[in-house]
Image 1 (spheres, rainbow, N blue to C red):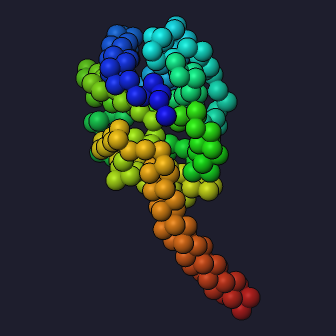
Image 2 (cartoon, rainbow, N blue to C red; image 1 turned 180 degrees about the vertical axis):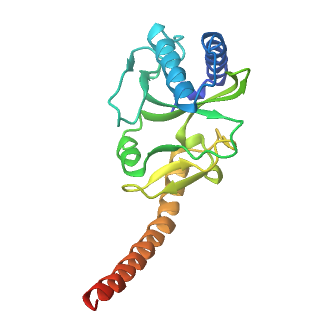
Length: 216
């Protein structure tokens, strides 16, 4: 179905605006900024951009300041009456490896029962220069445009979708939500049996521990 992400020109212009805002507003940062500090500041800039008013072809009613464990950092309603939630991530490209959590597979499955809901990722990439971050790329895509060759699954809860390596993010705008969700189900068909095997190994291990203490 049509969404703001169908308008490539609008998304490219919006990404450029975000990139300019990040470099302008964080240019005064001095000292050695930690990834957490940069991440918090980026989220503040993004929230302010959304609250100040988005271009009409990007979004209208804006929601921000979600609970700590919510799916989104900010959300908007686009011109097609879709509800777009945005998960803001940052990546320091000077680091060797980063595997950020994106969202719970169960929460996403429930959220995507409604075709007008979109879970999106806004990823700002930067390098440190003179003690301050210099941003060089911003991605803003719905999760279904992320190719599964750059995603993986983690163990907490029902399972967490993760970016396997934040340095490598492959975007495929031709990928449909149906294709992506079916690929998620295929990945879980492999993931869950492996987790069962791990649990069975742990059960066996602590049975030997129990035997040791019973005979001590």
